[in-house]
Image 1 (tube, one colour):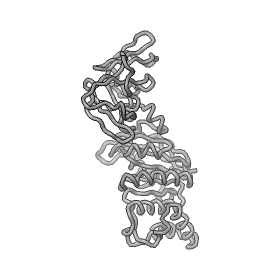
Image 2: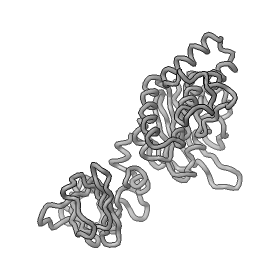
Image 3: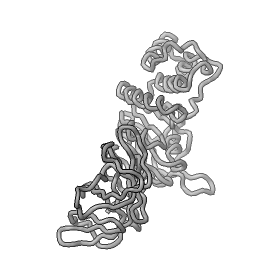
Length: 358
């Protein structure tokens, strides 16, 4: 078993606020978990604590049911792929991938078998005689991954391994990493600041900010039911629209009101009259039916043509919002005034004081 468990883990450097604060999280055996958040949120530090490259200053970190707070890295059965790849420039690809096995005194025949099998899986078997300087960025990245997985570790850690690649190669490598994980069945913890990468890769996503874990769940659950304003705007591109509004209870209905905004929602026990932040994703804001009395009215400031769809930017009162339009024939022009509608189930409410979901 290679499940990983953080129990109230802290990490701080001398004279600084906690880099990781009271982290409690369980990563199941064989799971692909993505740690995502802005720069400085503690995601790489969390990864390095799993690897044993950073000490745990408080709490308990376990791998496979064994507490590893004081266990040296070489005894944790963990392999790590760094952002910089960290390949030995004087060694061939074969030698880079075989290096850890040679240190463990694995028989030469077994080393050759493992390296060649891994190279075939990564489609780099024709590059084994080359040195890193003769490889492209994508090829170097595959060698770095191969060097990690050839050890057949219980836990595989990846610290933003695709950040140095161009957009097209990143997309293809994301798909390849998913296939590789399904084939290996290894527990994989992947760090990125790119929410698109997190959504497409992760079986589960943990969102960090300022060293604190804000929410961890499946990609769709994070997208459909964000726990707070930060998760709502960090997950999804374009981000969720946020509109400061007033909520008023009217019989079985809750009415959202703001400048140029009036939306009716089914009343729930959680609804309280007063100020709220209303959130709607761009794809859930569409043209209102003719003569509609409720909706969001705004003036079109810009239209981004994306090919198969367009992002329409509007000014609604003091708020700037985005609507995603897939019908080219009805996309409004700059300067037009439009009325948009949103289905009640797609309107999210947040407390303006705590920024938590209502």
